[in-house]
Length: 237
Image 1 (cartoon, rainbow, N blue to C red):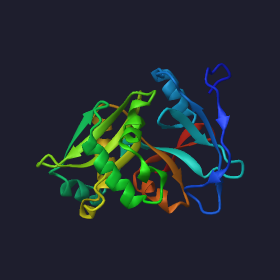
Image 2 (spheres, rainbow, N blue to C red):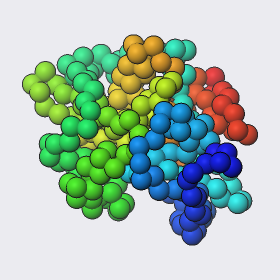
Image 3 (spheres, one colour):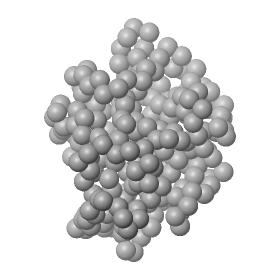
């Protein structure tokens, strides 16, 4: 951000790093209390910030630079046979992009996912209103992609922020017991196709951490770009 930025930034106290053991995390963050223009949104994105509710943040750890903002270059995406198999497994699913149409059905799926996959995390205790605030408090153009079967059963969803050059996957969740569908990968594959259909360029995936098992899945989606030394560059061709 430039020196004329109207936003006031703060540095957090050290926290346990969610990605690397025996590491501490510091964040630079600011609270946004008004809608951001698309130009401001892209300034934040191009400076490596992510959104949580109405907070824009990025890691600024003094002894570590492992967190790298990442995005898929969608128009050059390399479709592997394994990806095609996942798409074929889910031919009965249809994605629909919604505005901030928040339902208790979504929340039940969200709660099932976080309580199963992240039962020790803070998100597993989120109320319906806290779930809704992930979208309602957003200062950015935010929407949600729902995925339903032919029987209209909601089995997956992804909260998305709209950028001028693509979409940012803020948080995806799905039925964790449908393991044979590989829904986490399916969501990314479908969003890559959607970005291409919209004649946009990128699907932003948040932070990639090379040595973190939690983030290792992102390196399978290529070409993957990272924001390093204040510029986007291919890190995994």
